[in-house]
Amino acid sequence: MKNLSFTKVVFIFITILMAISPANMSAKNSFATNSDIKWNTIEEAIATNKNNNKKFILVVLYTDWCGWCKKMDENTFQDGGVISLINGSFTAVKFNAETQNPVSYNGKTYNFVKTGARGANQLALDLGSIGGKLGYPTIVVLDENGNKIQSFPGFKDVESMTAVLKYYNSGSYKTMDFQQFQMGQ
Image (cartoon, rainbow, N blue to C red; front, side, top):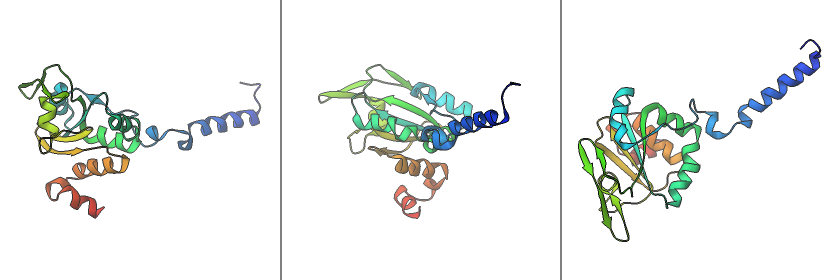
């Protein structure tokens, strides 16, 4: 270290600062306190939620073949703001809606149900279907006890996912519907 000139030390310091500056960091990490969403299984959700005192459980219903689900994983769920909102107020769950394994949740066992060419686990159908139809991805918000509050079918970009998260995080869901909330933003 004694042989390094002041100029070399300054150059090294500036190089390190530039390398770790927010402009050179990915959006995934630029706003998040944690770089990844802390995903849980549906079976773990209630116990985990009670231990961490979060108000909500956020369930992402997906399938392995769903292109829009993969797009949400690659984009929406990599955004630092979305990550922070989810990790801050929600117990997050990714649930493969087509799992053929029985799933125990809230004292009940849910099995795979063959419907059409494919099928779905009954829990996914109970949580996410609207008018008897289940699409992917579907975002489902549950209260702290695992009771369904609302589901949001379809792909959510960063802006629309952020709106959903803020709707619940702010408590607005208690006084207005989601459309009213969106109009006020």
